Every structure is written in C-alpha cells, then in structure tokens.
Image (tube, rainbow, N blue to C red; front, top):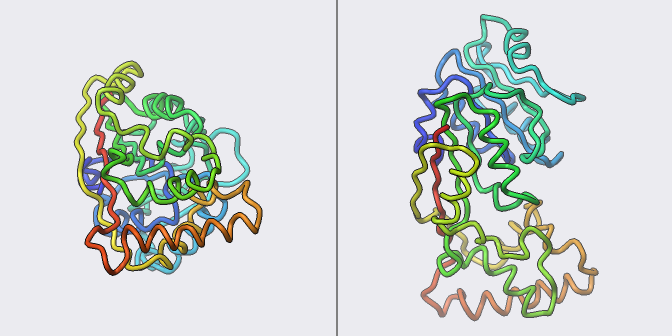
Length: 274
C-alpha cells in the first residue's frame, strides 16, 4: 500500500523498517522500484531476516543479474554511500538487508529520500524514538510513509487477542498495554510529527484487506507473528491452552458461521514531508 501511496517509484534512496518476510518488498523490487535506486530493508527479528532472504532467493528478481541483494551483518554503523558504491555500477537495483531497531537505525543523517514503515510504529517501545529516527535519516524534502492500526472500534482483528487476554485476567505486555490501536488519533499523531520537525503531514483512515476464514487461521497468524507472540510470552503452557480455548469460544460467538460480522482492520495512513 505505502509503495503506491508514497509514489515510491519516483525515489532513488529508500529505507524500509519492519520489513518482515518481505512480501511487499518483493512486489516493490520487481514492479515499482526504478533503475539506479538503492533500497535498505530492516527488521529486528532474526527469523524475519532469514525469511526475507530466503523468500527473495525464490522470487523472479533474484534471477536478474542486474538486481543484487546483500545481507549486511556484524556492524555498528553503516556507511550507506560506501555500501552502494561497493556494489558496482552494473547493478540496476541495489538491495540491502539489515537487522536494526526502528528506534536506533545504523544509518547516517539525511541519507534517504523515502522512508517506509508499515504496521511497525505501534510495536516499538517508544514510538517517538522511531519518529525522530525517520526524520533524522531523511534528507530535506524527503517523505516518510507510515501505516498504523486505526480506531479500536474498527479493528476487531487486532482487538481479538487483547480482549481474550483481558477476559482471562492477563496483562497485555508493553507497548501494547495501551492496545494495538493506541496511535490511531489523528490530532495526536499530527502534533507528534510536527514536533519532530515534519513540515507537511497528511493522513486518513482506510480499510485494510484481510481475508480470514476460521479461527485456525487466526491461531496460525498468532503463532507466526513475533509481535503477536509477545502477548503470550509470559503465559504457561496451561495458560496458553486456556487462551486458545477461549479464543475459539469468542471467535465462534462474534465471527462464527452464524454471524454476519467479519474480522476487519482499519488503517491510519500517514504521509509526512521533511
């Protein structure tokens, strides 16, 4: 979504954080990314990094000799210009994979013209740190695109797990103790972005596309998602079993075959210019 909304095809120096297994990145690289551009993707999860690299190796772009992916390891800071230059002039699309914390990126100031964060801002310990980092790594005139979950009443997909935990008397770990939708207020987000230094801020709510047919798929998403797994880290095996039993009950009651309500998730889309 953010690749098209930010008109990413016009940019040459791109940073994406919280890239996950790289489904969106592969689409961007193959169909949108322009020749001569470089693209730094990062995530904090080792498993996501491995999945990104593995998935890229199995996609069509990996067969193109003028598209190259480098996984940068064992670093404290990254000299972006050096990394790009070392890859050579015969590469049309230069891709770099980096393990990094959104709140403290290893890049120098002002080295990107586009910053993308899709559904990651709500997961960091202090989202203001991430906003400050997004501003820092952008050049003047650069664009930052964010999506975060929308209003709680329009995000039953994200409310399901916290609601089950709360009904069983379990605490939701930080930063989700405020609920995954805690960044959905437009006025607050605009104030925070302008305080960071962004000169132009545009935002709107839109519906996310989610197709989930049964509670088994919900359970599979929870198990595979590092962010959702954080909700269950402090539970014993017995408590986890109780959790999934209650999840089944609440799913059937609210979204089962005898109901008309689907799981859905609203998004708040934010485009900010430095």
